[in-house]
Image (cartoon, rainbow, N blue to C red):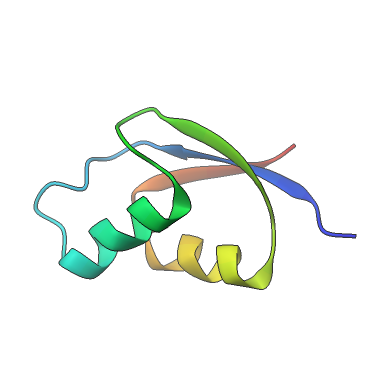
Amino acid sequence: MMKKIRIEQVKSGIGRTERQKLTLQALGLKRMHHTIEVVGTPQILGMIAKVDHLVKVEEV
């Protein structure tokens, strides 16, 4: 069973590459300190790895 994870955007996407901005958007993060809860699928974990310097991740 996949675990739920909580993702919070802690740094801005301004000045980042277009790919990183699109990854934040695909994760559902809209602004600074916006938090979402998602199931930790391999696709989600891959997206988190691309923007790990912009987000904070914790298990729920």
